[in-house]
Length: 169
Image 1 (spheres, rainbow, N blue to C red):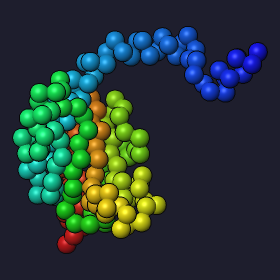
Image 2 (image 1 turned 30 degrees about the vertical axis):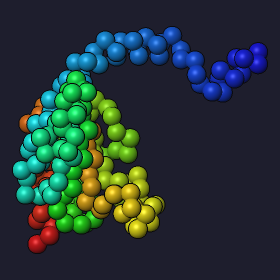
Image 3 (image 1 turned 90 degrees about the vertical axis):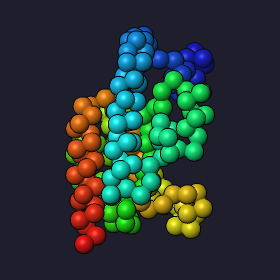
Image 4 (image 1 turned 135 degrees about the horizontal axis):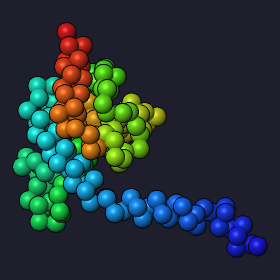
C-alpha cells in the first residue's frame, strides 16, 4: 500500500496506454527528426542571408565556430536554431506577434514549429544586467523547427522579419 502511494505521488509508473503511445512514437522518431533537421538547415541558411537578421547560431552552418566538431560527432545538426533579429525588444515582439505558422512556446521540442524570445518569455523576470551576463539579448529568438512544409516555415519567418524591419521606420 505504501509503495502504491509513492508510485502515485511521484508519477514514475506510466500506464500501459502511455507505454504504448511512447513505443509507437519511438518507431517514427528518426523520420520526424530527419524531417525537422532538413527544415532547420534550410531555415538557418535562409536566416543567415536575411536583412532582418544579424546572427544565426546553428551547428549545421559553416559559419558556426564548432561546425567541424558537430560534423564529426553528430548524425545531423538537430532542429534548434538561435538567431538575433535587427533592432531591439520591440522588433522581437513584433516578429513573434506576426508569426502564423510558428507557435509561441516556452517549452521547445515538439513536432510543430515553435518560437520564443527568452528576454520576453522564459527570462523576462531576470534583470537586464544579469541577462546580459548570460548572453541573452533582447533580439535573441529561439526556434524549434518542426516537420511542416519548409516553404510555409520560411515564408512565415520572412513575413514576420519584414514586419519587424518595417516597425523600425
